[in-house]
Amino acid sequence: MAADDADVLVIGAGFAGLYMLHRLRGLGFSARVLEAADGVGGTWYWNRYPGARCDSESYYYCYSFDPELEQEWRWTERYPRQPEILAYLEHVADRFDLRRDIDFGVRVASAVRDDDGWSVTDTDGRVRRCRWLVTAVGCLSAANVPDLPGLADFTGPWHHTGRWPHDGVDVAGKRVGLVGTGSTGIQAVPVLAEAAAHLSVFQRTANYSIPARNAPVSEAEVAATKADYPEIRRVQRESTNGHPFLVADVDALALSDDERDGVYQRAWDRGGLRFRAAVKDLLSDPAVNETASDFIREKIHETVADPATAEALTPRDHYFATKRPPIDTGYFETYNRSDVSLVDVRADPIASVTPDGLRLASGAEHELDVLVFATGFDALTGPLLSIDVRGRDGVALRDAWAEGPRTHLGLGVAGFPDLFTITGPGSPSVLTNMPTAIEQHVDWIADLLVRLRETGETAEPTRAAEDAWAARVQEAADATLLPQAASSWYLGANVPGKPRVFLPFAGGMNHYRRACDDEAAAGYPGFGLRPRACVSVS
Ligand code: NA7
Image (tube, rainbow, N blue to C red):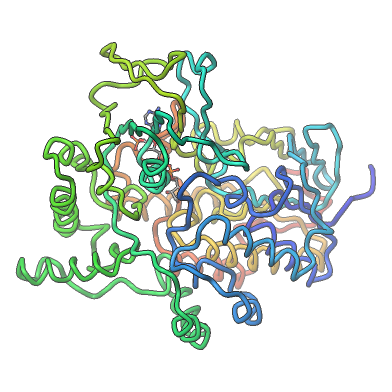
């Protein structure tokens, strides 16, 4: 067997991969990161579409592991734009001298387990060996481009927002069609509308959106944040979603209509994802949720001048925040422009792409020069399953997950020894502020690797632990309204043929962290630690 290229191979150089590399180095492991792109950044490398910015606020959508880094970086806006986040991650890569251990332009094709470790093969056929394999592939990195007949014949350019060309797309004077009204579409619509001659938005599901209230960050705000970081981080760690605020202890149903409207109005005026935390039980009590949903529906009708368009934009088939809630800058207002039109493709689905645009099931034709797919991602499982991962006895991860992903704590998979999945399915991941979730996972994996190095053991989740965790993930989801949103990507519903399994852990980052800590404190019983020589004994 060839010597290992590194103790640990890490796939992906976004937030997760960079921090994993930094931790591993600090612990004296040899590590290499394999990254398909030619730069760091992950999500923020690829998502360069017009209007791309983060929905978490800049002062906490960042690493917390280094107080000096916190103090030296200065964010310019409440919600950072994609170039600013990318610049931050590039700064981190330089500051910690990470690039020398990253192989850029390397796309991993397969990872195959044997008794001694992992063989990782890239798409050029080069094989690298390691003892431990860590995936840092992101949750939303496998683009979901609808399989529409005729797409290859479209004469204009078409792009998925998550694979946006680095030199931009010229839409000036063009008729642009945008498909999809999730967070991405809702960010892109106002910006594209400004630049294009005409924008047609093809909407399948009307969406709630909260005003972001983006603004430059003042020197005074920066100073206050920097002074308060220890407390901000403490609250993040104890909160449900990794944000630096807790859900308000406000019983919406005990308030008068006026009082409740006041609560929502203040949250609306403050803007952002915190609207979700304005009252308690919003995600578990349908009656509470309905009050918030109704408030937003009224706002849409107040904002959009044409009543028919307003109604078409008003979500009535799911509760607020049961699908990932977008935040926006002028989204609903954009439909008051004469050069923007809304096309309801729930009522009249897209049938095909023609050389000149889109044809709907009714036969209606929409002529377009540029087509934009803001159609989301094959979330959580897509990035992992795009690699041919083979565990013990050659079992393919694709087969192991044929009925949906199964993990222990979202961190490991039975049958796949010494494989660790940062923000994997079954962890809070997309329901949280991602850097918070990432840091927790990386630190936890790092601790386990230190133990494995010391003891010579191998770690592989037991089936019993996986079963128990699957039950806990389901139970946590069922305690919320989240599984009721039939078209949600949390359930895999956006990708045809994908098993309908609730993917992230909805029980709260705080409870999740405790479950991970308990697992470690108990000596990792769910990870079936055993001497390496025993690894092939099932
Ligand atoms: P999302 O939230 O998955 O949104 C994708 C949108 O595209 C959504 O409105 C979909 O409608 C729509 N869609 C997907 N496929 C089609 C087809 N075939 N036809 C018409 N419309 C379609 O992805 P985003 O990129 O906006 O956001 C992903 C996350 O990135 C976000 O939550 C943040 O965490 C950052 P549907 O609702 O499925 O009916």
